[in-house]
Length: 382
Image 1 (cartoon, helix red, strand yellow):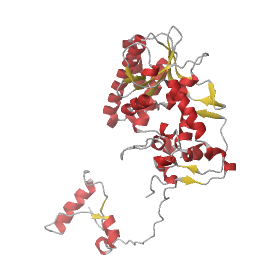
Image 2: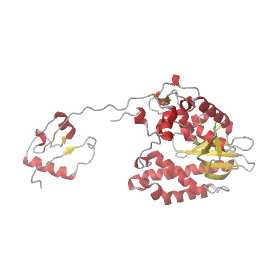
Image 3: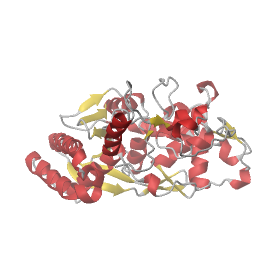
Image 4: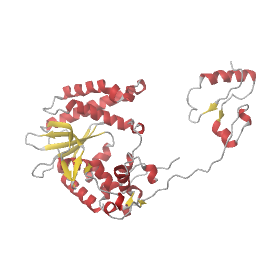
């Protein structure tokens, strides 16, 4: 029973949710004590503030104040950073090299200024969580390498690890509300495993290992990172397989256009003593698409062969682009935020990372997982 005063506030976005039991009870009391033709409704706090309507919520008091909002950072296409504050690194990774070419500003923020978000904001969710978890399951099952298991045993093994590690490695997916999502992911992993093992068996490959550390150098720097899956045939020919979650069409297009730069970096690091590059492929974990370029195709069947250049040519083009686009690091030239520039202003080679025909609902690859979009002005701050 309400013996004094009661304030109910409507929250925007909650209109489709079930009414709170307290409001349901209060509404019936109001209708009894204050008969009216209109249904009692909660006030919108936003409307009350906007109209400075104090009387409507008496005896409760509130005040409103108009404040000038400072506009967010405007887009800055170029940044004047003194050259003596920038220095090259003693190591590189595939991601670092792509960032160096695609968005020097992001490279500077991450690898020179060492700006990082809090650890809480870095907790993965959605497709990022799904991909990381499926990667982890595959690694735990196949990291030891060796002869291939048959398809049935491989699927059973990944299913067992998926179920046993779900609560500890992907806790959000263990919630009752995420049961359907977890079940779908389990099925996707099972199918991707079936495709992977079947295709490797058809090409007479064995697995050397998963998350194989790079042991090479480029541009006078040590290469760091790891190969998702390294396979090998009895004749010594190797294959580098990169696991991805989502963007199947885009990954295939990258193979066809010679823009699979991460694969090219891994292939370069895995070349043999005679400078022969391995075969390469993408395995898309959420739909089982297994694609390889015709210029560096995996042997055997059960894999989609796309018309694409040799991965060695992709690497050589990548090297040439990086070497010709690095004046911002070695001179007094401005540090560019290249995704914000018009394609006509890009130096030759940047199109390996950035798209010059980006659709309205697409994002340049360096901007997809970027912590600095509010600094460059790409993302307005509310």
